[in-house]
Amino acid sequence: MNPALRAVSDVTTDRWRRDRYRRLWCTDRMFDHDQYCLLDFGAGRKLERWGALVLDRPAPAASAVPAHPSRWAAADGRFERSPGVPGVWRAPQPLPTRWQIRHAASVLELRPTSSGAVGVFPEQASNWDWIAHQVRRAGQRLRVLNLFAYTGGSTLAAAAAGAEVVHVDAARTAVSWARHNANLSRLAAAPLRWLVEDARKFVARELRRGNAYDAVILDPPTYGHGPGAHPWDIHKHLPDLLAACGQLTRRARTFMLLTCHTPQLGPATLATLLADAMCGGQRRGITAGDLVLGTEQGRALPSGWVVRWSRGESSPTS
Image (cartoon, rainbow, N blue to C red):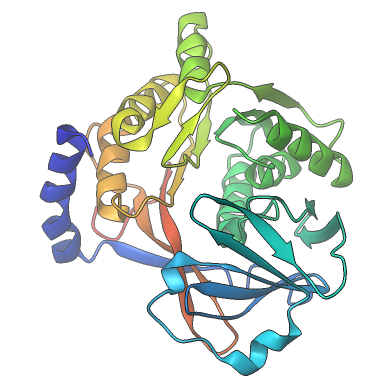
C-alpha cells in the first residue's frame, strides 16, 4: 500500500468505528430463489445453485469456518486449483458450456471459465437494484460511465432503467460477453457504448475532450493489466482515478458507486477516498459497508466492500 493510502486507512479506522458509519448489504433476497442461492460455505469453499446447476467453488473468505459435508454431495461441478497449476472443473457429467439466469430485467449468461468464475458476481445484485433506482428517480436520462465493467450486470441495470451507458473493460472477452448479455436482455437498441480500453487512459482522454457524466460505477481489481499491458495497482492508482472521475462528474453528479474486493482496503478507507475525490471531504450522502452473500439459514459470507453516494440522500452520520 502506498504511503498516502496507508495514511488514509490509519486516520479513518477509529473515526469509522466511532461514528457507526458502517452498513451491511445482503444479496440473499436479491435473486429469485430459482435463479441463484448460496447453499453453504466453509473450509475455503462455497456451494451455490445457479439456475438448475449446483457448483462448488473456492472462497478464501470461508477458510475459517466449517462446512456441512452432507450438503455438498449434490454438486454438479467442482472447481479445483493449486498454486502454479491451471484450475480445472471436475464433474460427474459434463457441465453445459452456457446457461442463463435472470435478475430483474436482465438476462445473464453463465459459463464455467478456466479461472473458476462463471460470469456473475452475485453479491453485486443489491447494487444493480440500487443503480436502477437512482436512474429512475433522476427524472431524466443519465449518462453513466461503468469502469472495470466485466460482463455488464451494472450496465444492464442502468440501461434497463433508462440510462445511456459507456461500458469500459480491459478484457475483450468480457466486453463481448456483456454485449451478448445486452442482446439476451433485449437491450441491443439501448444507448450503450462498448469499449475495450484501459480505465485510467479512457478517463484521462474523456477529460481532455471535455466530456461529462452524471454517474460513475467502478469495480476495480486489486491488480491487472489493460490493453497494451498498462499495469493497474489499486493501491497506487485508485486515488487518482477517483479524483479524475470526480472531475468527469463535477457538472451534474447524480450518483457514484465503488465496490472492491481488496482485503487491505475496507469500507472506511474507500469511503474517505471517495469523499475526498468527489465531495471535498464531506461525507453527506455517502454510505458504505460490507458486501455479503447470505444463506437461507442466515449465515453471511463476506464478499467485498461497497461505497455509495447519491445526490439528495444523507448518510446517518452526515
